[in-house]
Image (cartoon, rainbow over all chains, first blue to last red; front, side, top):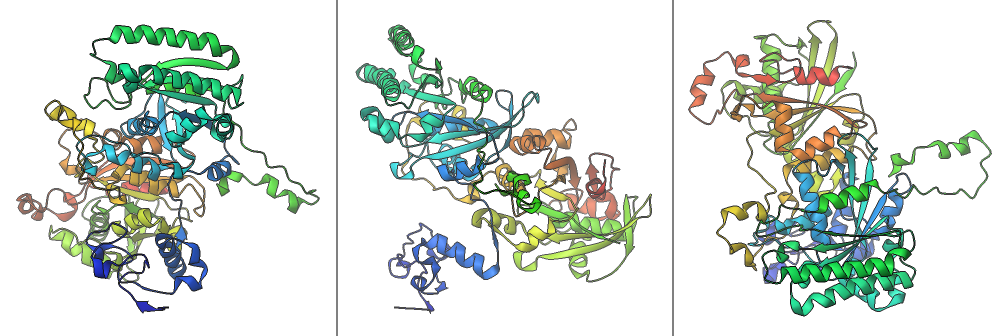
Length: 353
Length: 280
């Protein structure tokens, strides 16, 4: 095996010298940080199980004693648990089928804060700015796209959270930490089909608010309308029966993409059917839930009939006024006898998160 | 006499080095009144002299490359109290901060520099183009229906496309977490190239709120981490790459400088630094 040898690229999976194509997607290939680097044989050290970018990060950090900073990417459940050690959090779980607008809703909320205060709240920070930026990219002109798009959340991404730290602009409340869940729509469809999957969705049980999205695009079409409605109804029933929803669950059924329901011939018929649908849901399920409410949003109307993030301000206000999940109090299993031992219990945990 | 290290943060071409050059001339020349005056010359001043020579000639001050990064030390005396201090400013290149954002790494020196009682000079240029524009923003300018199509050809995300205000918020958020010391830091936000602002009704704070609303919200809503003031600064006095240079070059150099903000006189570039060191 080659060791300490100048190769065409330090990434062993890349044959840029021969093919002219960088597996990292850099063009020209010389702009790739791995191209032309002399590397140690990575199989002989601790970086064996790391991907090429991670290995380079480790290498850089080791060589120059640089200090690693937070990644800014979306948070994993383990990272959220760590955050919970010191802060109260409001979990907002957004459920919806593929292409129902889960990520677009979050991006629209972020875009509003990029332009100023929103719904009476100021942006005070986010641990997931990189994640928010990556997801917003395809709606910006820098992406080179002709129409706004949102990258699909893949099943392999698992459960992720976007973080917003907000403060009311009138200082009426202290800082609010929102964790908005993001998971592939396919997983929620599976949960609707299978009660075992529904009971495993930890973000549903943890949530202070569950936002159940109903795709307005499907509602606007005769052939898909009743399936869209029924999938919402079935989701509520499946989650209740699987124990994922309870008497404490605050569920918001939110119809997305309402801009697509404007100026269509059978608008009145749709409104009548929706009214009946909502009324039936209330009658059948509101007694088994903490709250069941209905609202409509247009996160991103490409025709500009509705302003950006229409309806999301009301959702945000509701999220921010619910009681948060308090910080996790880690119970020590050992007896603290000396003042030195007790020092730990007096240490502000936010210094470590 | 205890040295005070202030930290300069800013992305490329945000006016950091031009500010240092103008500051050094102001202190050295004594042409206008200021809150600080030069106390004595000590140590290596070659970097300051090099950048200031270009500034005096109304030339664009050479930007700091990562290889040329250095810390400048200036011995100053407060005009009113006579108190002396050593001000240290690491002149870091804007690329260093871009690298910090893309690699998510920083040097121990940078962390150490923020460990003392000094404040932060945060640079933003007013001479900037808009960023973060969405496709929906330009929709009204495009004939109806043209946004319906979907181009196959698109650019993948990279750190360079992140809007300036988001990048600056992220750089400041780093300071709120370990290994940085948690404390209240004073930040003088320097809006450089203020001469390009044409409306007399816009003050520097209002400009920040209108142009970089996310950064303004972030600074306003984190009083346990940051106290801030905003200054509009024209260190060159105008556009030295245009015909305006001929008018500027005949002026007494310090009178080219303009500084707008809290408790400052017209040419006093030391005001943002004095505020960093005040306790009110």
